[in-house]
Length: 119
Image 1 (tube, rainbow, N blue to C red):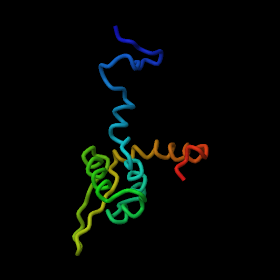
Image 2: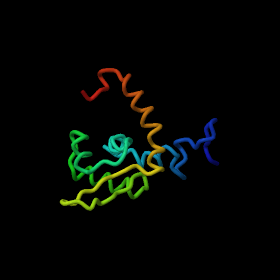
Image 3: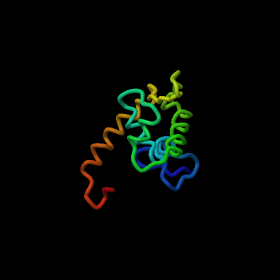
């Protein structure tokens, strides 16, 4: 018998399938992923500009997260025909759907108690 909460969601005791929030967190819950999406919200951004915009993260980590986001269809990658060659990233329509909750997270984060803030 499946253990179901009043809301109709499966309780933590049931291990059959992950809940929707777990699926979403697998895609956008990685460290730096939300920051990358946030910095792409206003349009295409070149890799080096993006890496300078996000402090405290290596270019290798940014590249890894960008590959994951591209693989999930949240961003697109375009190789520019420039010398030297540069690459820019942009949110896809699907990626833009994440901005709603990222804006809500940003609002929520403004009101965090001082002991919860990183700076």
